[in-house]
Picture 1 (cartoon, rainbow, N blue to C red):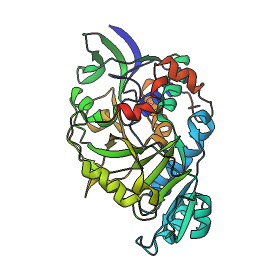
Picture 2: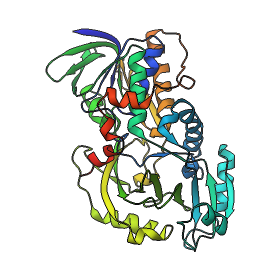
Picture 3: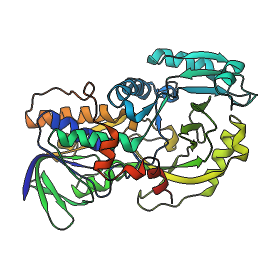
Picture 4: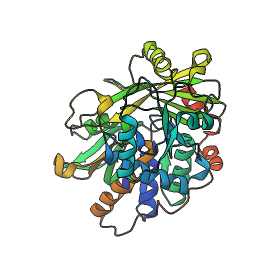
Length: 399
């Protein structure tokens, strides 16, 4: 059995960021991912680097986290980000007071905004509906999640972490009530002082291997790719968060998002073409050219939602993250879960988890990931065989 200080389960954005953070603090780290990097929700998202404005009214904690990390990601991964800007577009059918509420909430959360008339908004984004009454400009951006994950993984490897893809965890090893490592398919065992569950929507399944309960609420979201560049910046419907409220530019195409439907199993879930129709129904009033746009494909991602005091459907769940020390929560020392959150806040999630792991290991080292730039993303995607998936990972995720 090989040994390491920390075993990280999951090769999405949070997992690789955690492996990087730990390795840069001098912690011997092994990350295991059953598939390719970014094969889950990280790769199957709509590409929005959140300004936080979407959450400012109803979930200000998430909004503040998003705007802080939006700035960090721009700084450390500039070749993964496009500074498109974003608009919240107010149409006649939208709530009369929501634009005012949004502007005030953004100010409270430290999110810079600019109020535009309908004519000013259409001058900035000509594809908007003539019915646009007003808009609020926010610092949204777009991010290529595959490039970001690959660059972060390469940074982790260069700092000394071992990144193992195509390697499934079949068991979390427990001795005398303590998690002491993981078993991999094929029977290989890796001993670890701390096992970190960063498996996203599969977090509940990994926790079960360790014998602890973790009630997650995986939620599927439909995203439809339209083969035309109908917008140059992110276009948001100006209303409380709901299904079908965003258009994200993506090279010569754009992505319509999204829906929010709870699923039982992130590996085996039904899809519903009516959700695709809903995206067009809700977004065509904002961008009329969608009525005649050609659909390239639709893909589905599964969000790793965690809401311990859930009340209502998942669309209203907080997008903050939770860090669970199972030593205190479930009498399972040596096992930690980091769940929930968003790709935009992945680095902050990893920092919090790394702080806890280092505390358990007696490592007194500070986080440097907010200040150290990531390696070249082209080199990183080639290193992990992901170069042909820069825009195609979403294509590969379609069902």
